[in-house]
Every structure is written in structure tokens, then in C-alpha cells.
Image 1 (cartoon, rainbow, N blue to C red):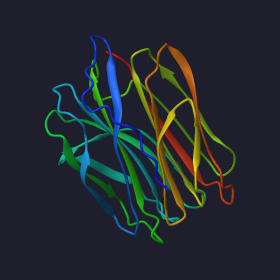
Image 2 (cartoon, one colour):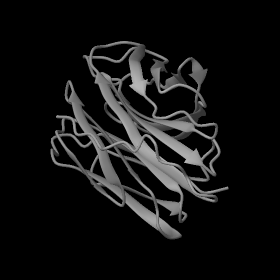
Image 3 (spheres, rainbow, N blue to C red):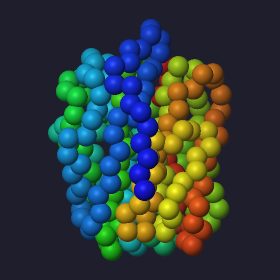
Length: 228
């Protein structure tokens, strides 16, 4: 099950403002140490454009990491990362990179070891333009083997926030504080991502609740960009 948001490809940001949108969502099954998501939309080109990639993956018990993310061959920087390592080593991460040209790009997620039992990998791609830098100003994470994922993050008016959440053996995720962009399943793993454009300054509580509680090995990562 996959649900997509409507991308605002041509939006222009006002001075002192970040304009953000969800431009692509994809998953890949199988067991691999590298996943290539070809020709993902990154929206209209802009000199100020930052591409954000929310990454979710499950390793089936091995102690492994996301070793890198590239967008059109350019290396992204990890902004927020969480892992639930007690049982399945699920990871939720947010990465970002400046990409001024082009409207689509291959997104490659490299791992330190192959995923097991066809756990697969998921991505959600976001475009930010305007008064924005590569690095997020605030982050929040959570990981747990029971209960609802929750964290807090500093939100600023005219900023942009992206979240990634992953859990074993689920089929849907309900977000609080952010608007869902994608919800998809690969081999007993739910990959979900969400975002929001804050309209005021606040300490925002973000939670992600999965409907299936068979095994709550889960992780949540959130990154918040403030106008510079």
C-alpha cells in the first residue's frame, strides 16, 4: 500500500522562507547492500534547492548501518538517524544534499551489509528551496520495542520538517504533528515518511503509531530546517 502527496514542483519561496514539497516515494524489496531508485523526481531546478531523502530499512538482526546516500551521484549528509537494534535492527534516517540542476535523479542508498529475508528499503524524496542550508537546525529521534514512537523537535515559522519511520510486521502508520507523504510495505516491513511546513515557532511533538502491534521493533527520525 503506497500513498503519495501532491508535489508543488514550481513553488517559489519568499524572502526568509523555505518552500518544501514531497516529490517522490519508492520502495525496493529483496536482500541487498545497495539499492538504486532510478529517475526519482526532485522537482523544478533552483539554485537554492536542497534535496532531502528519508530512508527506512530493516536488516533482519545484523548490526549494520546506512553508509551513504547519493542523489544524482552527489553525496548527501546524514541529518538524523535512529535504529531499533534489539531484534531486527530497523533504521530510520534523514539525509540532505544541495542539487541545483535537473528535475530527476537516481537515488542510491548504500548499506554496510546486505539486508536479510528480503526486508528491502524505502525512500521519500523532498525538495526545499529558498532561505535554506543543507544542514538541519534541529533533529529528534526515537526507537523502541513497544509503544508509539515519539520525539520533539524545534519548529520555526516558514521552515520545513521531514520525518521517517519504520516498523516490523505492520501495514500502516498514523502520524501526529506531520502530514503523511507515503506508507508502503516490503516483506513485513512498513516504510513511512511525513512532513510539515510550520506556521509558527514551537516545540513540535511528532509521533508515529503503527496499526499492527505483532512486533513493535520500530524507529523514528525527524529533521527540522529553519530559515537562515
